[in-house]
Image (cartoon, rainbow, N blue to C red; front, side, top):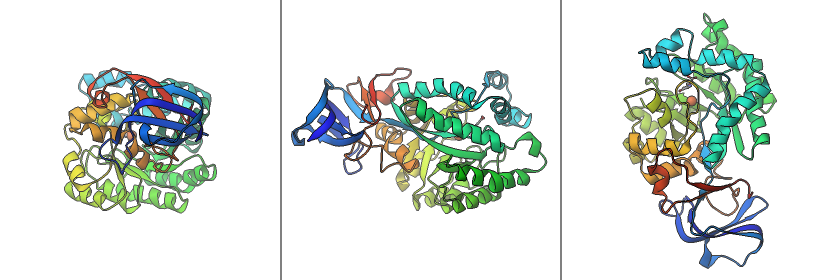
Length: 401
Ligand code: DI6
Ligand code: FE
């Protein structure tokens, strides 16, 4: 078989759905051709390769490149001062209601140029890449005006040209109420629906539409308006749901065949059942749970029992999850949410791909998918979840390189 590169002497965690658990292959080999996986499987069954380059992995583990399916990577400024206020006793809601929170990041983001947003986001993206991330979702939602949302999404798209990484963009106009609409929330939703979504869809700047369904965000009725317009423009939806309270956002997301419902700390039994009867992925964000010192964990056991697919993400954002480590996300998911090693690794690979509707092109080691690999200096996959603040990435491959 003609191919560009072959990685030999590897142990594979393929995450292929037809294999058990992690889909482990002890004596494995991966071959790439034109950026895709030409073969991933047991060395014993492999064809004879005519490769340009052979890489001896010396027994290292290969997993699919990691996928971070929920980030707010593009923003300006920081919120370290609010962190100090919170340490002094203020709550996230109090700070938000006092004009801080998301709106303070909005001010900094509006003041920044597109290039300044790119430069601000790059170190965060590089931190993800350094831990083996090959695909990242990036939301807008700190511009909150047409021009500033377009600027943010253009910055997100530009990151994919600057670094060797896949970027999936999400329009999150319904993130917070900008101050100029303080007395007219429905008027802002009208702006999102009638001006922003059509303009952003016409420019091809978003792969999906998201909203923040919450007391301090937008009501289910307002989110429904946003989703209806997204659907009319052929854009899939997803939702920040049940993070701080239960407004039955997950059920609303399911009604619109959402790719994912994210956070879900306050999801109840009925919500789990509704998700189980859908294709909507539960994207869990243990960094935000940890950082906000939330006490109610998402109903993991119920989600597991109902067979709801679970993805994991950093939720990288300046207010509730200033986190750029998918490895730490896995440790938190295991420690705080009692997710298994298999669930954690599937959550940052296969299920994360599912949450971005990219399972046809990445998320597992299978022939025909993009050759996105993370090669690890570990003895067993559990080490990726077990250790804290340690990065055993040996090499990262994106599209075969
Ligand atoms: N939920 C969150 O946790 C973040 N956004 C959202 O909708 C918080 C964003 C921020 O505080 O800047
Ligand atoms: Fe978020």
